Image (cartoon, rainbow, N blue to C red; front, side, top):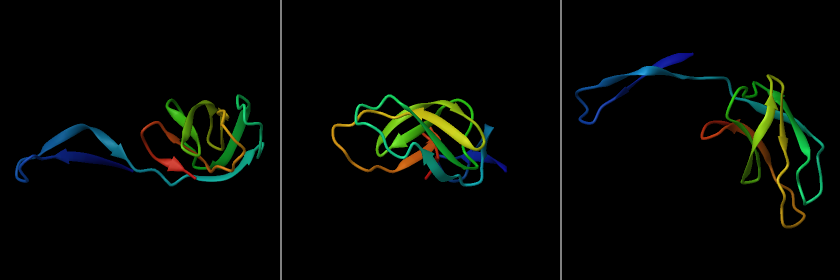
Length: 103
């Protein structure tokens, strides 16, 4: 739900934001497809889950490397896999640029 945000620099006087902070349900990644790919990257990876972020600013993290989503919907997000220097396993997370993550 929505909550207002108040800010104070002295603990006695507060300013109220004109914007609200919104709490949302935690997202959960339930699968990815494909589950592996070449180190050159550049291919689409679909991340499936519940309560996934949608709209502008959605990103996928492959380990610590982020890639902007090509498209996102309630149940899935599609991103291009980034290139990497060597074969390795990385966690895949989805979230908003500068915001919360699903893993």
